[in-house]
Image 1 (cartoon, one colour):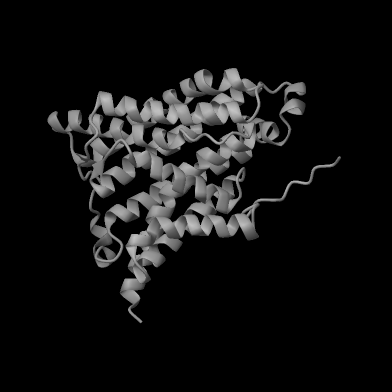
Image 2 (cartoon, one colour):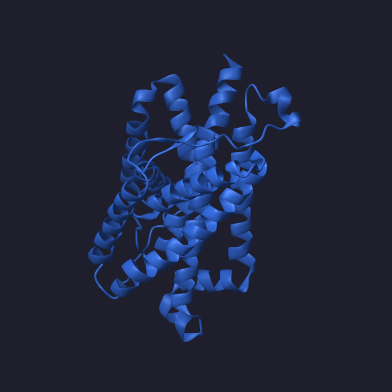
Length: 302
């Protein structure tokens, strides 16, 4: 057995799984609170990558070092996309909150198409090169040929971000209000929780994580395009379903599970079937484990 090849597949799966998890958290947080599948969430990821590219280009002209450019580009993308997520919720979803489930779903698809065409008109429909900004660390030299600094930074940054979100949700007053709203929004409102504020913060947090993932993966891959958000969003939604839609730990686990599964499938079968394998996995879970790995089946009393 080629252990080095096995390690490369495992670490590559961790990298892509970390990005899937960052995006999937946004899906599962929104669904957990307002039971909406925000199909425009993948485009927020794409907007984050384009915002990072614009900021990185300007800072590169000004002579900033790559590490500083990466940090500043990521911060700019997070702030910009958080604003986009907040605005999107107010315009596309809040007016339809009392409507049937189909109306906000159609609105989400419409917002996705709008953002894709907005980028085509504002930027281009072609692939654009993204500068390699992730620095090389000397202490990683012994394992750089297997892992690589880029993979290490992506996994580390994603892990820290998800750990910070977990602490925020579990221990802060706002996090407790978010959990209360997800459990029973009407009861939470009766107890003084501002549900509209909680929903807006949920979109802010989810959009911020997606934007961070967009900048990291664009720098890792070296290119960005208006369509990258669609496939990444569908994969992240798959990860959220695998982990248990509505469960934040489930979204993290589902992202890692999907990333590792794809990596080993492409390594030992064929990269041509990467997407087919991911969605086949989704169908299998929907048939045999529809609640996901960490999800719980809802029981409705009548």
